[in-house]
Length: 154
Image (cartoon, rainbow, N blue to C red; front, top):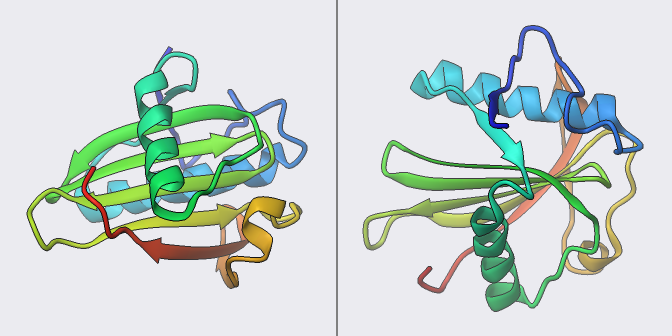
C-alpha cells in the first residue's frame, strides 16, 4: 500500500528487514523533507512488488549506462514528476538508496545518485567504480553519496 513518508516522525515501516533500518528510514525521511520543503511535494513510497515498473526503469538505466546490477533486495520504490524532472527512487535491504533524476526536456540534467545509509558497507558492485562523499543529516546521520551523469535516452 503506497504511503507518504513522514519526516517528522521517522518510521522504519517497510524497511524492517534492513540491518540498518533506522539509518535507511532516516535517509528516506531526509529525501521526503527535501521534496516537501523545496517543491511542496509529498514523498510517496510503495513496496517494490507493488510498482515493478519503477524498479525495471531504474535497473534499465543502471544496466545500460554503467553495466551495474544491484545485488541487494529492493524494498521500496517511489516515482514522481516535479519541476520538469522525472524522479525515481529504490530503497534496498542493504541500506542503499538509488535515485534517478531525469530531466524531461531535451538537454536537461539527468543523473543517477547513490546514497549509503550510516553503518552499511559500500556495495561490491559500486566499490571499485565510485568514490563517496560524506554529508551529515539530522534525520539520517552520516550519508555517503555519489552520482554519475546519464548519457542515454530513457
